[in-house]
Image 1 (tube, helix red, strand yellow):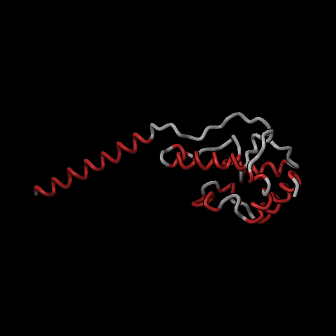
Image 2 (cartoon, helix red, strand yellow):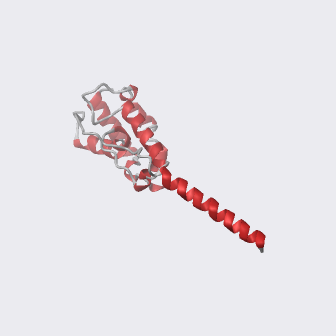
Image 3 (cartoon, helix red, strand yellow):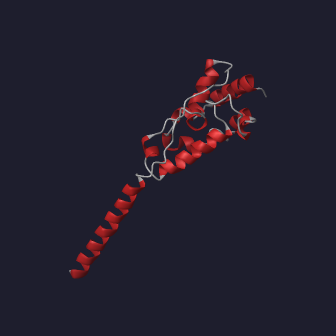
Length: 149
């Protein structure tokens, strides 16, 4: 009986410790921020813009929509780094500034299926970013019209 109580006490202490560490992680204020939008590209059509907003803006603009779980550490840390890297590659909200390497191959990235990344729509999350073949083709055509081939 005594070993059962010791085991229960130990498990309770471990559980409370894990909970306390998780709680302390939430105090680290590393979250996605959305600076002001300066200039968007001159889109060829509202359809192209709508497709870019649905499939690309969460990582490649200053209008990131952070889901509830994206506000919980350590997921928030990963998400913040991911968005920062995405904005460095291409930021549709700061088109008046030089864009990263990703801007050159926008249409190719969508055509090849590397953008948006498949994991972005896993488990039904961000389902609006899951492009049908027709939407993907329309987005590629719109990106080419907007930015050139």
